[in-house]
Image (cartoon, rainbow, N blue to C red; front, side):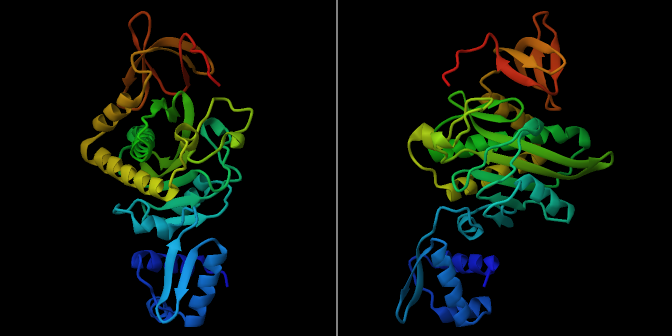
Length: 334
């Protein structure tokens, strides 16, 4: 009897009950299913790793949830108005961004999040693959429908970077550094990758998919040997496993607050927050634009999201695409 939605509903009821017990009859009445069906769902949840005790004449109590990003567990402690209030959850999926795009085209409401324990075809910027092992990290894609002119869409690129940085600091006490346009670094190593995908026409934006991958509990042997850039996880940095459900809650709350701030106050507060976390601001860098390589000093962000590069001649050059690295190169500790 495969009914993930009903199982999530049962978990939600048990989480809300806390230390109290819920009888089979109470669950049956609340969900409109038979007591026999309740028992079968409880057994299926136990098989999936939920520690649910049954006490005679009292009912069921949830003692422990497995380390999974289950919608019911996330919803139980979420304070957002719309981000993450609808979650499309998958044990394994090819790409959360692709699934979110499908749902957005089908009319999904703003704030819906696609979550997966594992991705078989996760992708990053410029078509690069993103390693997505099961059960250790956060792989999420958020549907937004911003009411902003198309020429301001690039401002939203920086939304998820600042949100991830703030969620990381709250859960670990560590401060990350942001690398233009959308990398999150910890101690010089890549902690998260972000991929925004826009659906728009000249008359406006249809939807924006905000893709987020954060290395939370990944171990050293789970990173591929051929990484383009040294990577890390919060587990490796702190020596402590991260509560992934709590991290998801913090991240969704930060995303919503920053998104509302952007709509209310414009790009300036978000730009200043991003610049404060970018450790290359004011430093000499090399920018590989593919067709040319530029050198200069990072002067911040333009209102359209371009990286402002001050050249040796003193001119300000906006950069819209490229790979930014310190110059001269710093020694790698990889």
